[in-house]
Image 1 (cartoon, rainbow, N blue to C red):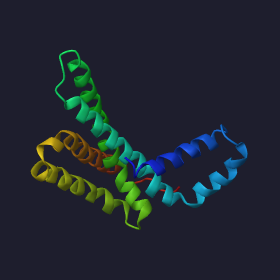
Image 2 (cartoon, rainbow, N blue to C red):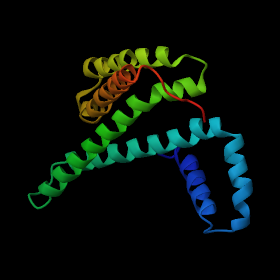
Image 3 (spheres, rainbow, N blue to C red):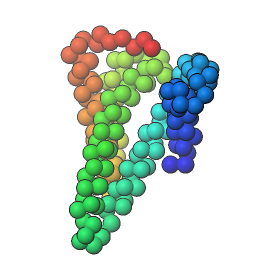
Length: 169
């Protein structure tokens, strides 16, 4: 969580400056900085949000998994269920967008990354099932299996539209 904080603070500063909440004169230089360094933005700031979110969800799952008195069992189960749904959403998002981000960051073709993504995520999911300790499987399972589903959905979608997509930024 601590490693992700600088990216999150930069994103919050960008939001505050962009919406004119703090010194509207800073807006043009900030926009120019982000536009000139879009790849760094994608590589540093977006993963910071992802890592921070995953760490937070993991902490909630840890808290919800504790055995508590009967007064708090419903709250713990609700928090655990919401956390698992958030993990499924994050995993689906990762599986669905990472092949396109690989194309933007590298010079691979879209067909190569989209066809290889399900195998990459399937390998991660099978590795999680086989080698991950039981205490971590409850939060890794929904994440990696929904990434597999997300990458397969992207593959099917691109096959249906006959690979005609626009990747210009």
